[in-house]
Length: 109
Image (cartoon, rainbow, N blue to C red):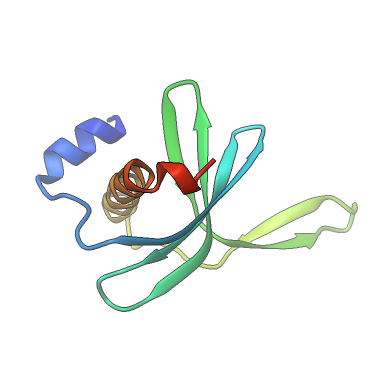
């Protein structure tokens, strides 16, 4: 199911998610970093926007560590109870970011 299909199926816009900050940082699939305020009052820093071809997704903050072979690994800090919750979050943040970029296009270069 694509992001657009999930959004249409949910019937809700961005559910009160507010983008508080956006910083462009292009590297491989990474497009930039964002800070998001949730309706609960929680603020999430250092979320990432990724894009490959036409697909976009939000990456959650993670803690970096090295395994015994010296390879970088990442541990989850935030986890969703199920795939449906993760999909709803993705849709809400992507919709909020789209709105943010449309209204802040002069400051998002």
